[in-house]
Amino acid sequence: MNRIDKAFARLKEQGRKGLILYTCAGDPSLGFTEELVPALAAAGADIVELGLPFSDPLADGPVIQAASQRALSAGASTKGVLALARRIRQKTDVPLALMTYYNPVLRYGEADFVRDAHAAGCDGLIVPDLPLEESDALRTECSSRGLGFITFVAPTSTPERIRRAAACATGFIYGVTVTGVTGMREALPEEALHMAAAVKAVTTTPLALGFGISTPGQAGTVAAVADGIIVGSALVDLVARESQASAAAAVQAAGQFVRSLRQALDSAK
Figure 1 (cartoon, helix red, strand yellow):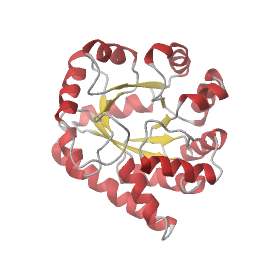
Figure 2: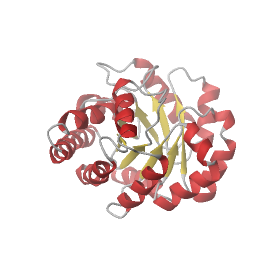
Figure 3: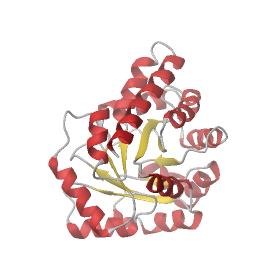
Figure 4: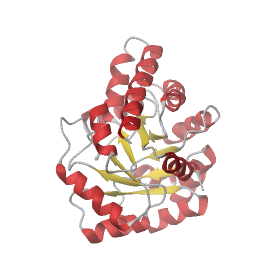
């Protein structure tokens, strides 16, 4: 049982919902991310999704696209992010889910990438542009190292697709609440709640919902139908604004935001 499995087991035992925060590694610097992740954990994050900056982040909206560009411009690289994960692991035991697109994995080599991610202390892998039908080899590598392989479902997923994604998932299932790219939304569609019910009907693997969740109010609503929520763009946007003042201000503001989400989740349990 890796850290992600242990986190969801603990949450279930406590009757609480999981809080997963996405951050773009290296935005605005790798040193900043090294300080941010432990602060997120201390503020109440159960899992941190560590985004590997990529030049063509197809699933991401303008906020995370801009963060990726800033990180790449600052010199972030695949090996640099893996080294960052290793340093973060020395500071916190929070589960780390490495989020990347497939091209960096392919270029690095699937087996080598999974080996080095595991050695760095990562606990799961999220690859949004890798079709499930073409993921057998990477899933096998993850399984051999004990890394969770997080699969996706969406409001447009058919019942058969949901069953297949659930059968292939380890760690948790990533439920996309909206069609389109990541980003903050005013409201979440009813279809997302139906999708969550369909997933819960076919598997006991934890379901975390993401895309579009940006406020404590939305977090509380979504928590009622899932095992956890994922917040990305709202945090990335906050960090981008506050870091213009100072890194310390950005870390402090991020911690306050996470505590507000944590409070909303715990109030909704």
